[in-house]
Image (tube, rainbow, N blue to C red; front, side):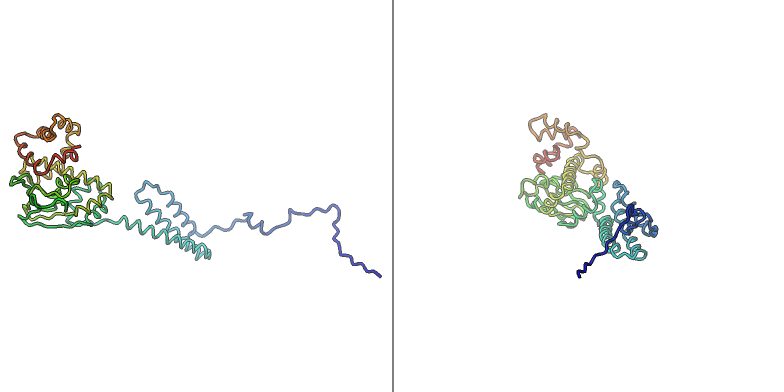
Length: 340
């Protein structure tokens, strides 16, 4: 007898339609946002407010980067508190800890860069009188005076430079305190007062000609103190700082013109010299076109310069002193650099 095993079949009645509308799927229900979760703790919202304020700070504000990093640091700290105490979410806490460290380091660095720069007491008057009006930052001035330079002193009667003996290639100096006298072959030329270059004409005239000697004698008339740079290292430093290089070109050019102007009255005292120094320099009082026209009116360049200077003061008081200055400093080599 053959026995046939039949598998049970499910028979669906005719006209039956499955009810998909009433069926529920758990995964779909979890992402449908039909039931919103309760609002997070206040700490969460304060952290996001810090982020929002930090991002809307205008970049035109002077301290906008410091404020941005500070608010981001506070926001990350609040997120860590929220994730640890109210959410118990380890991943949120770890990520915000990383962000906290990064922003905190940036904040500390930015605050450090904004720290007040302390300039030495001996150099503060030099900075305020010569470099601050030209918008030289204190940190740049500190770099300029903190490297390859030192403060030296001379007693009354000691010589800074001697004619035909002292090399002009070694240094460049600015007088900080005291007074110096400049003479050429025993003839007095002019005085040097504080916050003025001591050897600016030699520095400018010998930039292309090395190995020359001083053509003037510079002697301390009082106990003097001056800031002295190594010329070679200063030149190398200025080549890497274009802004400061242009500042030095202007200051040295102005110092030379002030020395030319001081020949009008070699007996100018310290108070009068400071008043002249605060006034516009000779080049700024008269137009460059006027200078060139005066100098172009004759074929001899030195005669042209004499005519120009003669127009600013009486010829009788200038002629002898100017000739001494030309012979001592080699003004014919300086004309292009100073006036053009």
